Image 1: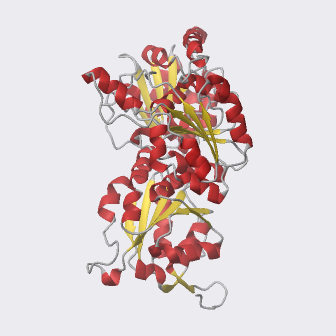
Image 2 (image 1 turned 45 degrees about the horizontal axis):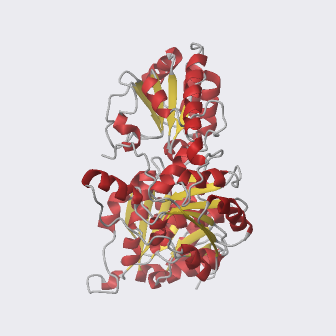
Image 3 (image 1 turned 45 degrees about the vertical axis):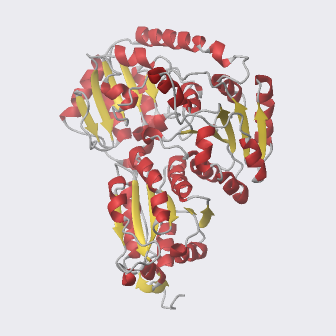
Length: 552
Protein backbone atom coordinates (compact mmCIF):
# COMPACT_ATOMS: atom_id res chain seq x y z
CA UNK A 1 0.00 0.00 0.00
CA UNK A 2 2.75 2.43 -0.92
CA UNK A 3 3.18 4.92 -3.73
CA UNK A 4 6.51 4.85 -5.57
CA UNK A 5 8.26 8.25 -5.51
CA UNK A 6 11.78 9.57 -5.92
CA UNK A 7 14.20 8.88 -3.08
CA UNK A 8 13.85 11.31 -0.18
CA UNK A 9 10.28 12.35 -1.00
CA UNK A 10 7.25 11.57 1.14
CA UNK A 11 5.42 8.36 0.26
CA UNK A 12 1.77 7.47 0.50
CA UNK A 13 1.47 5.08 3.44
CA UNK A 14 -1.45 4.01 5.57
CA UNK A 15 -1.61 5.37 9.10
CA UNK A 16 -0.49 2.16 10.77
CA UNK A 17 2.67 2.11 8.69
CA UNK A 18 3.32 5.75 9.64
CA UNK A 19 2.99 4.78 13.31
CA UNK A 20 5.43 1.91 12.90
CA UNK A 21 7.98 3.98 11.00
CA UNK A 22 8.17 6.53 13.81
CA UNK A 23 8.39 3.80 16.44
CA UNK A 24 11.25 2.19 14.56
CA UNK A 25 13.01 5.54 14.14
CA UNK A 26 12.98 5.89 17.94
CA UNK A 27 14.46 2.43 18.41
CA UNK A 28 11.26 0.66 19.48
CA UNK A 29 11.58 -3.08 18.85
CA UNK A 30 8.56 -4.54 20.71
CA UNK A 31 4.85 -3.72 20.62
CA UNK A 32 2.80 -5.30 23.42
CA UNK A 33 -0.85 -5.79 22.59
CA UNK A 34 -4.00 -7.90 22.59
CA UNK A 35 -5.54 -8.39 19.18
CA UNK A 36 -8.18 -5.83 18.27
CA UNK A 37 -9.67 -4.86 14.92
CA UNK A 38 -9.06 -1.16 15.46
CA UNK A 39 -5.32 -1.92 15.53
CA UNK A 40 -4.92 -4.07 12.41
CA UNK A 41 -3.20 -1.39 10.36
CA UNK A 42 -0.71 -0.76 13.17
CA UNK A 43 0.06 -4.48 13.26
CA UNK A 44 0.56 -4.45 9.50
CA UNK A 45 2.90 -1.49 9.82
CA UNK A 46 4.92 -3.13 12.61
CA UNK A 47 5.21 -6.33 10.59
CA UNK A 48 6.56 -4.37 7.63
CA UNK A 49 9.01 -2.40 9.80
CA UNK A 50 10.33 -5.41 11.73
CA UNK A 51 8.84 -4.54 15.12
CA UNK A 52 7.97 -7.64 17.14
CA UNK A 53 4.30 -7.96 18.07
CA UNK A 54 3.97 -9.58 21.51
CA UNK A 55 0.35 -10.48 22.24
CA UNK A 56 -0.96 -11.20 25.73
CA UNK A 57 -4.21 -12.43 27.29
CA UNK A 58 -5.47 -9.18 28.86
CA UNK A 59 -4.86 -5.55 27.95
CA UNK A 60 -3.70 -4.74 31.47
CA UNK A 61 -0.76 -7.08 30.87
CA UNK A 62 0.07 -5.43 27.56
CA UNK A 63 0.23 -2.05 29.29
CA UNK A 64 2.16 -3.42 32.26
CA UNK A 65 4.58 -5.05 29.82
CA UNK A 66 5.16 -1.66 28.20
CA UNK A 67 5.91 -0.23 31.64
CA UNK A 68 8.09 -3.27 32.39
CA UNK A 69 10.07 -2.67 29.20
CA UNK A 70 10.69 0.90 30.36
CA UNK A 71 11.82 -0.34 33.77
CA UNK A 72 14.10 -2.99 32.26
CA UNK A 73 15.72 -0.79 29.61
CA UNK A 74 15.20 2.85 30.67
CA UNK A 75 13.74 3.50 27.21
CA UNK A 76 10.03 4.03 26.46
CA UNK A 77 7.90 0.91 26.29
CA UNK A 78 5.01 0.82 23.83
CA UNK A 79 1.66 -0.97 23.85
CA UNK A 80 -1.38 -0.87 21.59
CA UNK A 81 -4.85 -1.24 23.11
CA UNK A 82 -8.00 -1.57 21.05
CA UNK A 83 -10.85 0.91 21.41
CA UNK A 84 -13.17 1.16 24.39
CA UNK A 85 -12.63 -1.76 26.80
CA UNK A 86 -9.11 -2.30 25.48
CA UNK A 87 -8.13 1.16 26.67
CA UNK A 88 -10.10 1.00 29.91
CA UNK A 89 -8.50 -2.37 30.70
CA UNK A 90 -5.12 -0.64 30.50
CA UNK A 91 -6.03 2.21 32.82
CA UNK A 92 -4.49 0.72 35.97
CA UNK A 93 -1.15 0.28 34.23
CA UNK A 94 -1.25 3.87 32.98
CA UNK A 95 -1.97 5.10 36.50
CA UNK A 96 0.83 2.92 37.85
CA UNK A 97 3.28 4.24 35.26
CA UNK A 98 2.22 7.79 36.06
CA UNK A 99 3.07 7.36 39.74
CA UNK A 100 6.26 5.46 38.90
CA UNK A 101 7.34 8.05 36.29
CA UNK A 102 7.74 5.17 33.83
CA UNK A 103 8.18 6.38 30.23
CA UNK A 104 5.71 4.55 28.01
CA UNK A 105 3.53 5.25 25.00
CA UNK A 106 0.03 3.81 24.82
CA UNK A 107 -1.44 3.63 21.32
CA UNK A 108 -5.22 3.42 21.36
CA UNK A 109 -7.70 2.29 18.79
CA UNK A 110 -10.74 4.53 18.38
CA UNK A 111 -14.10 4.39 16.66
CA UNK A 112 -14.09 6.07 13.22
CA UNK A 113 -14.27 9.85 13.15
CA UNK A 114 -16.70 10.00 10.25
CA UNK A 115 -19.24 7.98 12.27
CA UNK A 116 -18.52 9.64 15.62
CA UNK A 117 -21.55 9.95 17.82
CA UNK A 118 -23.60 7.42 15.85
CA UNK A 119 -22.88 4.41 18.05
CA UNK A 120 -19.98 2.58 16.43
CA UNK A 121 -18.62 -0.53 18.14
CA UNK A 122 -16.65 0.34 21.29
CA UNK A 123 -17.17 4.06 20.74
CA UNK A 124 -16.07 6.22 23.66
CA UNK A 125 -13.89 9.29 24.04
CA UNK A 126 -10.80 8.01 25.88
CA UNK A 127 -9.12 11.37 26.35
CA UNK A 128 -11.08 12.69 29.38
CA UNK A 129 -10.35 9.67 31.52
CA UNK A 130 -6.76 8.93 30.47
CA UNK A 131 -5.69 12.57 30.66
CA UNK A 132 -5.36 12.65 34.49
CA UNK A 133 -2.93 9.69 34.46
CA UNK A 134 -0.82 10.62 31.43
CA UNK A 135 1.55 13.41 30.49
CA UNK A 136 -0.03 13.80 27.07
CA UNK A 137 -3.36 12.55 25.69
CA UNK A 138 -4.33 13.28 22.10
CA UNK A 139 -6.40 12.01 19.21
CA UNK A 140 -5.22 12.03 15.60
CA UNK A 141 -7.39 14.37 13.51
CA UNK A 142 -5.93 13.24 10.20
CA UNK A 143 -3.68 10.55 8.79
CA UNK A 144 -1.01 13.08 7.88
CA UNK A 145 -0.48 14.20 11.48
CA UNK A 146 0.09 10.68 12.81
CA UNK A 147 3.93 10.73 12.58
CA UNK A 148 4.13 13.97 14.52
CA UNK A 149 1.76 12.71 17.21
CA UNK A 150 3.83 9.56 17.74
CA UNK A 151 6.95 11.73 18.06
CA UNK A 152 5.15 14.04 20.50
CA UNK A 153 4.01 11.11 22.61
CA UNK A 154 7.45 9.54 22.87
CA UNK A 155 9.06 12.88 23.58
CA UNK A 156 6.56 13.64 26.35
CA UNK A 157 7.11 10.21 27.88
CA UNK A 158 10.90 10.64 27.91
CA UNK A 159 11.03 14.24 29.14
CA UNK A 160 11.44 14.79 32.88
CA UNK A 161 9.32 14.13 34.75
CA UNK A 162 9.03 10.98 32.68
CA UNK A 163 5.76 9.08 32.47
CA UNK A 164 3.09 7.61 30.21
CA UNK A 165 1.67 9.28 27.11
CA UNK A 166 -1.44 8.32 25.14
CA UNK A 167 -2.35 8.77 21.49
CA UNK A 168 -5.41 7.22 19.88
CA UNK A 169 -6.24 6.83 16.22
CA UNK A 170 -9.74 6.86 14.72
CA UNK A 171 -10.31 3.76 12.63
CA UNK A 172 -10.73 5.70 9.41
CA UNK A 173 -7.63 7.86 9.95
CA UNK A 174 -5.30 4.99 10.80
CA UNK A 175 -6.40 2.84 7.85
CA UNK A 176 -6.28 5.64 5.25
CA UNK A 177 -3.14 6.65 3.36
CA UNK A 178 -1.40 10.02 3.35
CA UNK A 179 1.70 11.64 1.96
CA UNK A 180 3.52 12.29 5.23
CA UNK A 181 7.21 12.31 6.07
CA UNK A 182 7.87 9.45 8.46
CA UNK A 183 11.52 8.61 7.84
CA UNK A 184 13.20 11.53 9.56
CA UNK A 185 15.74 11.19 12.35
CA UNK A 186 14.50 10.78 15.88
CA UNK A 187 15.96 11.70 19.24
CA UNK A 188 14.76 11.79 22.81
CA UNK A 189 16.14 13.65 25.85
CA UNK A 190 19.18 12.10 27.51
CA UNK A 191 18.76 12.45 31.29
CA UNK A 192 22.45 11.74 31.84
CA UNK A 193 23.34 14.83 29.83
CA UNK A 194 21.06 17.25 31.69
CA UNK A 195 22.88 20.13 33.42
CA UNK A 196 23.16 20.40 37.17
CA UNK A 197 20.89 22.46 39.34
CA UNK A 198 22.39 25.88 39.86
CA UNK A 199 22.15 28.93 42.01
CA UNK A 200 22.11 29.52 45.72
CA UNK A 201 20.34 26.25 46.48
CA UNK A 202 23.33 24.18 45.32
CA UNK A 203 25.72 26.27 47.41
CA UNK A 204 23.44 25.96 50.43
CA UNK A 205 23.17 22.18 50.02
CA UNK A 206 26.93 21.80 49.60
CA UNK A 207 27.51 23.81 52.76
CA UNK A 208 25.08 21.66 54.71
CA UNK A 209 26.62 18.43 53.47
CA UNK A 210 30.18 19.59 54.03
CA UNK A 211 29.51 20.35 57.70
CA UNK A 212 27.32 17.30 58.35
CA UNK A 213 28.57 14.77 60.89
CA UNK A 214 25.75 12.28 60.32
CA UNK A 215 24.68 12.61 56.68
CA UNK A 216 22.55 10.06 54.87
CA UNK A 217 21.21 9.47 51.37
CA UNK A 218 17.69 8.21 50.74
CA UNK A 219 17.38 7.47 47.01
CA UNK A 220 14.43 6.28 44.97
CA UNK A 221 13.02 5.64 41.53
CA UNK A 222 13.90 9.08 40.17
CA UNK A 223 17.60 8.27 40.58
CA UNK A 224 17.17 5.28 38.26
CA UNK A 225 15.31 7.20 35.56
CA UNK A 226 17.92 9.97 35.72
CA UNK A 227 20.80 7.48 35.34
CA UNK A 228 22.39 8.95 38.42
CA UNK A 229 23.69 5.78 40.07
CA UNK A 230 27.38 6.20 39.22
CA UNK A 231 27.38 9.79 40.45
CA UNK A 232 25.68 8.69 43.68
CA UNK A 233 28.29 6.01 44.32
CA UNK A 234 31.07 8.55 43.72
CA UNK A 235 29.49 10.94 46.22
CA UNK A 236 29.00 8.28 48.87
CA UNK A 237 32.52 6.90 48.42
CA UNK A 238 34.33 10.23 48.54
CA UNK A 239 32.25 11.81 51.33
CA UNK A 240 31.58 8.63 53.37
CA UNK A 241 27.81 9.01 53.24
CA UNK A 242 25.62 5.98 54.08
CA UNK A 243 22.94 5.24 51.48
CA UNK A 244 19.48 3.69 51.56
CA UNK A 245 17.29 2.99 48.54
CA UNK A 246 13.76 2.09 47.62
CA UNK A 247 11.78 1.52 44.43
CA UNK A 248 13.78 1.30 41.23
CA UNK A 249 16.86 2.65 42.99
CA UNK A 250 17.36 -0.84 44.41
CA UNK A 251 20.55 -2.14 42.82
CA UNK A 252 21.81 1.33 41.92
CA UNK A 253 24.16 0.89 44.86
CA UNK A 254 25.17 -2.78 45.16
CA UNK A 255 23.96 -4.53 48.28
CA UNK A 256 27.55 -5.45 49.17
CA UNK A 257 28.87 -1.89 48.89
CA UNK A 258 30.40 -0.86 52.25
CA UNK A 259 28.15 2.21 52.49
CA UNK A 260 24.93 0.43 51.52
CA UNK A 261 22.47 -0.20 54.35
CA UNK A 262 18.89 -1.41 54.53
CA UNK A 263 17.92 -2.73 57.99
CA UNK A 264 19.33 0.33 59.79
CA UNK A 265 17.10 2.78 57.92
CA UNK A 266 15.01 3.87 60.88
CA UNK A 267 18.07 4.61 62.97
CA UNK A 268 19.83 6.42 60.13
CA UNK A 269 16.99 8.62 58.95
CA UNK A 270 15.97 9.63 62.48
CA UNK A 271 19.58 10.25 63.53
CA UNK A 272 20.80 12.11 60.44
CA UNK A 273 21.68 15.77 60.67
CA UNK A 274 21.51 16.14 56.85
CA UNK A 275 19.56 13.90 54.47
CA UNK A 276 19.87 13.95 50.69
CA UNK A 277 16.50 12.77 49.38
CA UNK A 278 17.23 11.81 45.78
CA UNK A 279 14.45 11.00 43.35
CA UNK A 280 11.93 9.84 45.93
CA UNK A 281 8.86 11.66 47.27
CA UNK A 282 8.17 11.94 50.96
CA UNK A 283 5.03 9.83 50.66
CA UNK A 284 3.72 7.02 52.87
CA UNK A 285 6.97 5.07 52.37
CA UNK A 286 8.82 7.82 54.23
CA UNK A 287 6.07 8.50 56.74
CA UNK A 288 5.16 11.70 54.89
CA UNK A 289 8.47 13.11 56.06
CA UNK A 290 8.13 11.72 59.58
CA UNK A 291 10.75 9.03 58.95
CA UNK A 292 13.41 11.73 59.34
CA UNK A 293 14.41 13.32 62.62
CA UNK A 294 12.74 16.54 63.72
CA UNK A 295 16.02 18.41 63.29
CA UNK A 296 17.18 16.69 60.10
CA UNK A 297 18.00 19.17 57.35
CA UNK A 298 16.52 17.75 54.15
CA UNK A 299 17.94 18.42 50.69
CA UNK A 300 15.61 17.35 47.88
CA UNK A 301 17.26 16.38 44.58
CA UNK A 302 15.33 15.50 41.44
CA UNK A 303 15.05 15.89 37.71
CA UNK A 304 12.13 18.30 38.00
CA UNK A 305 9.97 19.92 40.68
CA UNK A 306 7.24 17.81 42.21
CA UNK A 307 3.61 18.66 41.58
CA UNK A 308 2.99 18.13 45.31
CA UNK A 309 4.01 20.28 48.23
CA UNK A 310 6.56 18.69 50.54
CA UNK A 311 4.88 17.45 53.73
CA UNK A 312 7.57 19.18 55.81
CA UNK A 313 9.98 22.05 55.34
CA UNK A 314 13.12 21.33 53.35
CA UNK A 315 16.46 23.13 53.51
CA UNK A 316 17.17 23.12 49.77
CA UNK A 317 15.65 21.93 46.50
CA UNK A 318 17.95 20.98 43.62
CA UNK A 319 16.23 20.32 40.29
CA UNK A 320 18.11 19.48 37.12
CA UNK A 321 20.33 16.70 35.87
CA UNK A 322 20.58 14.38 38.87
CA UNK A 323 23.97 12.95 37.91
CA UNK A 324 25.46 16.39 37.30
CA UNK A 325 23.90 17.76 40.49
CA UNK A 326 25.33 14.93 42.59
CA UNK A 327 28.77 15.47 41.05
CA UNK A 328 28.60 19.20 41.76
CA UNK A 329 27.46 18.52 45.31
CA UNK A 330 30.29 16.04 45.84
CA UNK A 331 32.83 18.57 44.67
CA UNK A 332 31.37 21.40 46.72
CA UNK A 333 31.04 19.38 49.93
CA UNK A 334 34.53 17.91 50.08
CA UNK A 335 36.63 18.32 53.19
CA UNK A 336 33.97 17.50 55.77
CA UNK A 337 34.46 15.88 59.17
CA UNK A 338 35.40 12.27 59.87
CA UNK A 339 32.23 10.20 59.63
CA UNK A 340 33.62 6.80 60.51
CA UNK A 341 31.89 6.65 63.91
CA UNK A 342 28.53 7.34 62.24
CA UNK A 343 28.95 4.58 59.66
CA UNK A 344 30.26 2.22 62.34
CA UNK A 345 27.17 2.83 64.46
CA UNK A 346 24.89 2.14 61.52
CA UNK A 347 26.82 -1.00 60.58
CA UNK A 348 26.42 -2.33 64.11
CA UNK A 349 22.68 -1.68 63.94
CA UNK A 350 22.51 -3.28 60.49
CA UNK A 351 24.34 -6.40 61.66
CA UNK A 352 22.21 -6.69 64.77
CA UNK A 353 18.99 -6.54 62.79
CA UNK A 354 20.24 -9.01 60.21
CA UNK A 355 21.21 -11.39 63.00
CA UNK A 356 17.68 -11.07 64.36
CA UNK A 357 16.31 -12.42 61.09
CA UNK A 358 18.26 -15.66 61.16
CA UNK A 359 15.68 -17.71 63.01
CA UNK A 360 13.02 -16.90 60.41
CA UNK A 361 15.40 -17.40 57.50
CA UNK A 362 16.18 -20.92 58.69
CA UNK A 363 12.73 -21.73 60.12
CA UNK A 364 11.88 -25.42 59.65
CA UNK A 365 8.12 -25.01 59.84
CA UNK A 366 5.79 -26.46 57.24
CA UNK A 367 3.95 -24.68 55.66
CA UNK A 368 6.96 -22.41 55.23
CA UNK A 369 7.79 -19.03 56.67
CA UNK A 370 8.12 -16.56 53.75
CA UNK A 371 11.63 -15.61 54.87
CA UNK A 372 12.71 -19.25 54.59
CA UNK A 373 11.55 -19.13 50.97
CA UNK A 374 13.78 -16.14 50.30
CA UNK A 375 16.72 -17.65 52.13
CA UNK A 376 16.62 -20.63 49.77
CA UNK A 377 15.90 -18.50 46.70
CA UNK A 378 18.90 -16.31 47.46
CA UNK A 379 21.16 -19.34 47.01
CA UNK A 380 19.81 -19.91 43.48
CA UNK A 381 19.60 -16.38 42.06
CA UNK A 382 22.47 -14.97 40.01
CA UNK A 383 23.92 -11.58 40.84
CA UNK A 384 22.26 -10.02 37.78
CA UNK A 385 18.90 -11.77 38.17
CA UNK A 386 15.85 -9.56 37.64
CA UNK A 387 13.41 -10.03 40.51
CA UNK A 388 9.81 -8.87 40.16
CA UNK A 389 7.36 -8.57 43.01
CA UNK A 390 3.61 -8.98 42.56
CA UNK A 391 1.85 -9.58 45.82
CA UNK A 392 1.08 -8.34 49.30
CA UNK A 393 2.66 -9.82 52.40
CA UNK A 394 4.81 -12.30 50.45
CA UNK A 395 6.41 -9.55 48.37
CA UNK A 396 6.65 -7.24 51.38
CA UNK A 397 8.90 -9.82 53.03
CA UNK A 398 10.95 -9.99 49.82
CA UNK A 399 11.44 -6.24 49.89
CA UNK A 400 13.10 -6.63 53.28
CA UNK A 401 15.60 -9.36 52.44
CA UNK A 402 16.14 -9.81 48.68
CA UNK A 403 19.50 -8.28 47.76
CA UNK A 404 20.09 -6.45 44.47
CA UNK A 405 23.40 -5.59 42.89
CA UNK A 406 22.73 -3.89 39.55
CA UNK A 407 20.31 -1.21 38.34
CA UNK A 408 17.03 -2.57 37.00
CA UNK A 409 17.22 -5.81 38.97
CA UNK A 410 14.15 -5.14 41.11
CA UNK A 411 10.63 -4.23 39.98
CA UNK A 412 7.50 -3.88 42.06
CA UNK A 413 4.20 -2.08 41.49
CA UNK A 414 5.43 1.06 43.24
CA UNK A 415 3.26 3.47 45.24
CA UNK A 416 0.12 2.78 43.20
CA UNK A 417 0.27 -0.77 44.54
CA UNK A 418 -1.54 -2.48 41.66
CA UNK A 419 -1.57 -6.27 41.78
CA UNK A 420 -1.40 -8.11 38.47
CA UNK A 421 1.53 -6.07 37.19
CA UNK A 422 4.07 -8.86 37.64
CA UNK A 423 3.48 -11.08 34.59
CA UNK A 424 3.64 -8.09 32.23
CA UNK A 425 6.81 -6.82 33.90
CA UNK A 426 8.34 -10.31 33.76
CA UNK A 427 7.46 -10.78 30.09
CA UNK A 428 9.17 -7.52 29.18
CA UNK A 429 12.18 -8.09 31.43
CA UNK A 430 12.89 -11.53 29.96
CA UNK A 431 12.50 -10.26 26.38
CA UNK A 432 14.85 -7.38 27.19
CA UNK A 433 17.37 -9.64 29.00
CA UNK A 434 16.97 -13.14 27.53
CA UNK A 435 20.26 -14.40 29.01
CA UNK A 436 19.44 -13.42 32.60
CA UNK A 437 17.29 -15.10 35.22
CA UNK A 438 13.90 -13.42 35.59
CA UNK A 439 12.17 -14.43 38.79
CA UNK A 440 8.58 -13.41 39.45
CA UNK A 441 7.50 -13.42 43.10
CA UNK A 442 3.74 -13.87 43.38
CA UNK A 443 1.19 -14.12 46.10
CA UNK A 444 -1.62 -16.58 45.48
CA UNK A 445 -3.98 -13.63 45.44
CA UNK A 446 -1.96 -11.80 42.82
CA UNK A 447 -2.01 -14.88 40.57
CA UNK A 448 -5.73 -14.37 40.06
CA UNK A 449 -5.22 -11.05 38.30
CA UNK A 450 -2.98 -12.19 35.45
CA UNK A 451 -2.06 -15.83 35.97
CA UNK A 452 -3.25 -16.77 32.50
CA UNK A 453 -0.24 -14.87 31.13
CA UNK A 454 1.65 -18.13 31.66
CA UNK A 455 -0.01 -19.02 28.36
CA UNK A 456 1.68 -15.91 26.92
CA UNK A 457 5.04 -17.02 28.30
CA UNK A 458 4.57 -20.47 26.74
CA UNK A 459 3.41 -19.21 23.34
CA UNK A 460 6.31 -16.77 23.04
CA UNK A 461 8.92 -19.08 24.56
CA UNK A 462 9.69 -16.81 27.53
CA UNK A 463 11.03 -18.95 30.42
CA UNK A 464 10.13 -16.81 33.40
CA UNK A 465 10.35 -18.61 36.75
CA UNK A 466 7.68 -17.65 39.27
CA UNK A 467 7.84 -18.43 42.98
CA UNK A 468 4.49 -18.27 44.73
CA UNK A 469 3.86 -17.76 48.41
CA UNK A 470 0.56 -19.62 48.78
CA UNK A 471 -1.02 -19.01 52.19
CA UNK A 472 -4.64 -19.21 51.07
CA UNK A 473 -5.57 -15.73 52.34
CA UNK A 474 -5.31 -12.03 51.56
CA UNK A 475 -2.88 -11.65 54.43
CA UNK A 476 -2.31 -7.89 54.34
CA UNK A 477 -6.07 -7.47 54.77
CA UNK A 478 -7.02 -10.47 56.92
CA UNK A 479 -4.57 -9.91 59.76
CA UNK A 480 -5.14 -6.15 60.22
CA UNK A 481 -8.92 -6.54 60.04
CA UNK A 482 -8.86 -9.27 62.64
CA UNK A 483 -6.71 -7.05 64.83
CA UNK A 484 -9.17 -4.17 64.47
CA UNK A 485 -12.50 -6.01 64.60
CA UNK A 486 -11.81 -9.52 65.81
CA UNK A 487 -12.94 -10.99 62.51
CA UNK A 488 -12.24 -10.65 58.79
CA UNK A 489 -14.39 -10.73 55.69
CA UNK A 490 -13.55 -11.22 51.99
CA UNK A 491 -10.04 -12.31 52.95
CA UNK A 492 -10.09 -16.04 52.24
CA UNK A 493 -8.78 -17.93 49.21
CA UNK A 494 -8.71 -21.66 48.46
CA UNK A 495 -6.15 -23.24 50.77
CA UNK A 496 -3.42 -25.29 49.09
CA UNK A 497 -4.78 -24.47 45.64
CA UNK A 498 -2.79 -26.21 42.88
CA UNK A 499 -1.81 -23.20 40.79
CA UNK A 500 1.22 -25.23 39.67
CA UNK A 501 -1.15 -27.61 37.89
CA UNK A 502 -2.77 -24.63 36.14
CA UNK A 503 0.65 -23.65 34.80
CA UNK A 504 1.34 -27.23 33.72
CA UNK A 505 -1.98 -27.31 31.87
CA UNK A 506 -0.90 -24.17 30.01
CA UNK A 507 2.30 -25.89 28.89
CA UNK A 508 4.69 -24.74 31.60
CA UNK A 509 6.62 -26.41 34.41
CA UNK A 510 4.89 -26.62 37.78
CA UNK A 511 5.95 -27.84 41.23
CA UNK A 512 4.30 -27.92 44.64
CA UNK A 513 6.48 -27.36 47.73
CA UNK A 514 5.09 -28.09 51.16
CA UNK A 515 8.25 -28.45 53.29
CA UNK A 516 11.57 -26.58 53.46
CA UNK A 517 13.73 -29.47 52.28
CA UNK A 518 11.75 -29.64 49.02
CA UNK A 519 12.29 -26.02 48.08
CA UNK A 520 15.88 -25.72 46.84
CA UNK A 521 15.65 -28.74 44.49
CA UNK A 522 12.34 -27.45 43.14
CA UNK A 523 13.83 -24.02 42.44
CA UNK A 524 16.82 -25.54 40.69
CA UNK A 525 14.58 -27.73 38.53
CA UNK A 526 12.41 -24.78 37.62
CA UNK A 527 15.34 -22.67 36.41
CA UNK A 528 16.83 -25.65 34.58
CA UNK A 529 13.57 -26.59 32.86
CA UNK A 530 13.87 -23.98 30.13
CA UNK A 531 10.11 -23.45 30.41
CA UNK A 532 7.90 -20.88 32.05
CA UNK A 533 7.64 -22.29 35.55
CA UNK A 534 5.74 -21.87 38.80
CA UNK A 535 7.06 -23.14 42.11
CA UNK A 536 3.94 -23.15 44.29
CA UNK A 537 5.18 -22.88 47.88
CA UNK A 538 2.69 -23.44 50.67
CA UNK A 539 3.38 -20.73 53.28
CA UNK A 540 2.07 -20.35 56.80
CA UNK A 541 -1.09 -18.20 56.95
CA UNK A 542 -0.40 -17.45 60.61
CA UNK A 543 2.74 -15.44 59.80
CA UNK A 544 1.89 -11.75 60.13
CA UNK A 545 3.89 -9.19 58.17
CA UNK A 546 5.11 -6.50 60.61
CA UNK A 547 3.63 -3.55 58.73
CA UNK A 548 4.90 -0.19 59.97
CA UNK A 549 4.22 2.08 56.99
CA UNK A 550 1.70 4.87 57.57
CA UNK A 551 -0.54 4.39 54.52
CA UNK A 552 -2.54 7.56 55.05
